[in-house]
Image 1 (cartoon, rainbow, N blue to C red):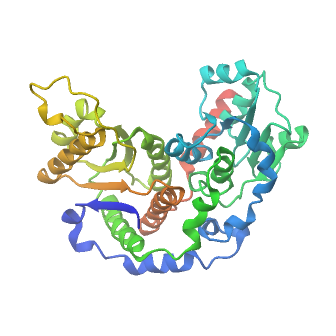
Image 2: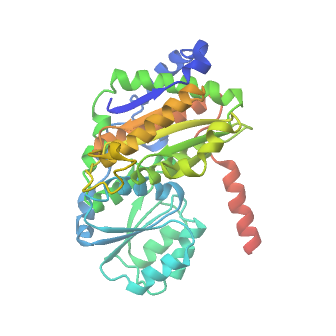
Length: 398
């Protein structure tokens, strides 16, 4: 396992750390046995899933240098996270219309869609914000040569729109929810069009899951379930020591919140960029209410040596220190402080920033979330409260 995870959670829940191992073993053993593509969410984690996607028919769309992804929540967050991690490698401009933002709409309208591919994603085909974005992009001629739509094959608005305009339609598997769809058509097709190695993204499933991955997953799930049951923790603070990780945390936010925020249980995931927030929120984190746990995220990335040190009188110790050495020192100082104050934290280091390494992170968090939900007696695949707000919004507008 290339994903490095260290934690002090066991100091708080030592007695119960291996309580659920047998349940976790049974879940993982059954995961790869489910071969029925048509009626199981879990087939998404099967090595054979990849074979059901015909990428050859999308080759004609690779000529576009600009990609506009129109999608909300899980329809765009996974692709956004991957794009942020590989932005330097990707030779295309990718814009995500993932909210209602008139400034972004004006920006896209101003180009009249020239040299742009439009990738429209909505599982239901009725996501209000997606339909509104399409309506307001009145300078764009959506057609079969510049648009792909991913939605369920049923009588929904996007499906009918694709048929009317003869647009390339990709079926969204109805058993895969948005927040778990990053390694299905929803995430893989954008990644393919960006020029990433999609076989490497799915390669994680072609081999047996490593024993170190399973051991770390068991420990994490056992501890998570006890933390949730205790109801003593209200917030999960993601301290990120690289801006490339911000969109990955936004993906984690949806995954955790929609999956586990039910039955009066749940922890609020918060993105906290570091070291920026050392100068604004750290006082509260360290000296405020003990109702928080911390995930400290970093990754292996390019380093840079300073060309000069102007402030030699007081800061001679900065001489020859690289950019990453300085950030790592700040991170280590925080971890030592959390340890001294006995504040629960988990340090997560992504040592492998290849497509496979990123997949390892995504799969770990998805499995951790699903199994934690099962242990809590929660359905990690539904989001009933969200649906209620959608219904009321429509009622207000009509």
